Length: 139
Image (cartoon, rainbow, N blue to C red):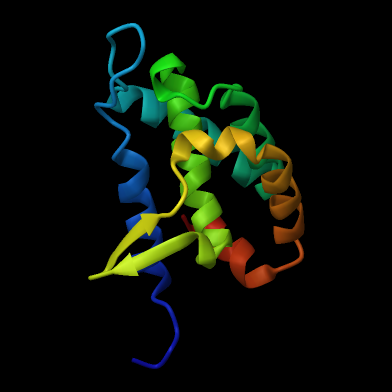
């Protein structure tokens, strides 16, 4: 291997991880549905395309709520933290581990709400790193 990452593989893996939230049980005996993921991903991608990465991060952070226990979250909040966790892992390779081609987050997605300020700063800084910015837009 030449040391360069296959961005299609990274994007596909992150998209797969986002979809893993489907079926998560919530407090009201409901589960996160595929339409919950589809709706928020569509909104986030629309904002990303029209207004950029920082605006998309603001949207997702505003939709993630304040709770850190997934059983207390709404479906939209749970999906938002899942998306943010995957994006965070792309921005911070030290926050993930890779074993047998599978990327594992070292931070539970629901704990994203404890580091919102750090994430916002990270996404702001992303606008200065063109390679990472293009990777996130590709996702």
